[in-house]
Image (cartoon, rainbow, N blue to C red):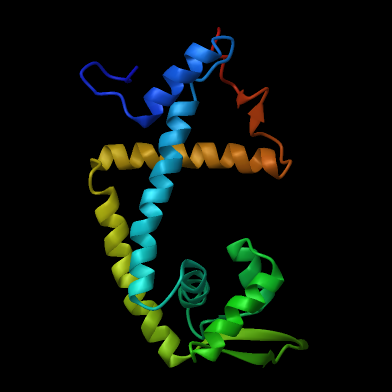
Length: 191
């Protein structure tokens, strides 16, 4: 049941074993890995969200402030560009910006190059808050991955990049990505 001898079965091993018993006609090879990945995301998100909450932010608000901060001075951009970067709708971005503006963390101003457009920028208070939050956030993320050796962390990152490129390529209809449910250039599991 467990991947390695001597390793006790975890929740994913148990679920896969149950499915294999009930549906031996299906291949559940990926289920355990993806279930662990999903649980890692949920558990890791709790730790990450806790850092943001300690600074009075939710993840979406932090993402807006961090996107503005990492662009460099003057730390501003159009809301449409922010929405595109953060993969949310323009309406969703408007709600986030409204909340941050009400708290004095961002400003809206007319774009000097296009009067029909706005630019969202960090206030000094927003800059100070995001700098404090990102300092703690970076330390927290490094702590979360410190369980891995440097080689394991690099391998994990490379694998995630490969999977993400394939899944996003398939989702967005780009060339490449997945072919018949497997990565291109890789023989089927049964070969």
